[in-house]
Image 1 (tube, helix red, strand yellow):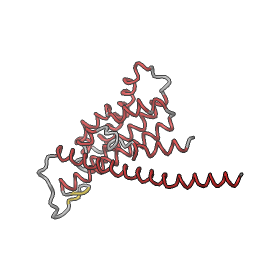
Image 2: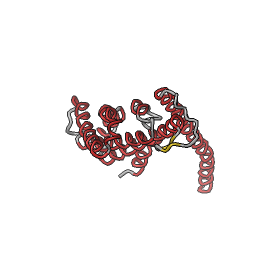
Image 3: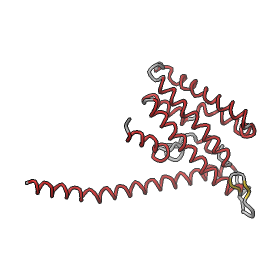
Image 4: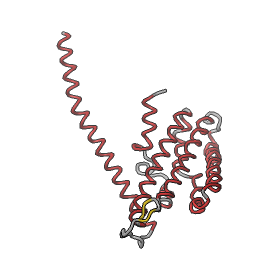
Amino acid sequence: MDRRKVKETLLGGLIKNNPTFVLVLGTCPTIAMTTSLSQAFAMGLATTFVLIFSNLFVSLLRNVIPDKVRIPCYIVIISTFVIIVQMVMRRYLPDLYAAMQAFIALIVVNCIILARAESYASCNKPLYSVLDGVSMGLGFTAALCLIGIVREFIAGGSFAGIKIPNFPAMEGVGASAFGFITFGCLMALFNFVIQKVNEARERQKRAVLPLSEGKVERMEVEAK
């Protein structure tokens, strides 16, 4: 097992290739399902479950699925796990399922899942594909929860369904409009922070490089 690849895969979906803030995939559930933290968290978990197992089975069957029908095959695999999510939520979380029913079904054509099946799982071994599903799913869930917290707090004056007393909530703000504004601001902030971190790392490398070159030169002189 390549430890470097494992690390890059696990951290990729959370930071470098975050599906929401960097790749900008799955914007429909991102806007629609982040009016509250509970809905955002449930959508993130459901998508993560489907991502992990669809990646696993696409990877296991990558040498069996004919190239000409790979997309329909991926959709069949994804649909199977979406149905499992629907059955579990209908049985144990009926109220939440009633509010999210349409968007749970749309996980089948979620751009994140199809993109990872096509670009990663179909080209990598099962273990790496599962790790990619975990990473992308957690990155998506974290982004949704962050947006959900901000939207619920500012627009609804509550946190995780708990009303905050005397908080001046912006209840008159349109849900969709405020969702796009929140999404855009957080995406800009996320990418700004990542850019600054990368710039700091580059400066650190440039500072270390001359020292390394000087050390090599001294070693060459001593060898002579």
